[in-house]
Length: 346
Image (cartoon, rainbow, N blue to C red; front, top):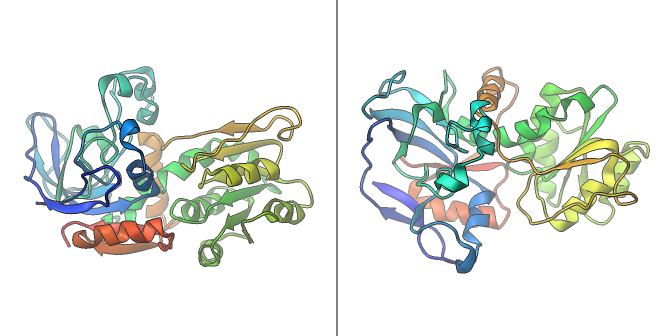
């Protein structure tokens, strides 16, 4: 079968032919209909050899959806042909966090060598993939796997970040979304669906700001030195009650702190390497800064329910599996408007 692999440190991903996997006891074989392309992949492929923690080659793709193609011994509750989405941040299933469904915060994953598909374990960017346990599969129940697959990360991650701030996003409040790309344009839709807040989107790209307005942002601001001042102007000097930084670089984290109001939440989600110091005369009083990661299995079901009810829709570009390297080039060059999706089986 064909697969998209990262094979050599510093090299571009390649389309290669590898053996088709077979499900062992407890495993599920998935015929992949769609796999998402993400900035996390770019971050992974930018690590130097002395910091790269996984064996190569590595099949990419931590967003996956498709049809059940085979069941290992002991698997129940699924049948061949069922359309499912893959829950990515897989944990041990037994620790205190996993017992809450928060496998994204598994306490033993590192110790046990458990990695997400595409981020250490073989991923979804192949014609077939193995899923180690049926609990990591969520029924699509009528959703299109191609348009739905980005929701397993680009929907779940912002939903998880936004959900904890809902008590602060009351009538009259403001939410700021920094980065209106793959995750940001979904976050805008989630904020509009779940809160009465005014939503202000920031980005360096006028094209992405146009997308932000299309999906529901009340106001858009071009990122730069004057961005924080402009947000303050738009909020009458108060600032925002919640700020979601989907870039996570030094300048964006600084902007996030500058626009956060008293008792605001700031979530630094992006992998840009930035940080926001917290302290008296550094941020407004009682600002809470978090670095959320992905989301729980229960939250993925909630995200898919929102999509099923028509509240969120991902703007996608589709590529055949042979075009996957091109999709990564476009993502690296910031030319993808929304989310790129690979179709491994056409």
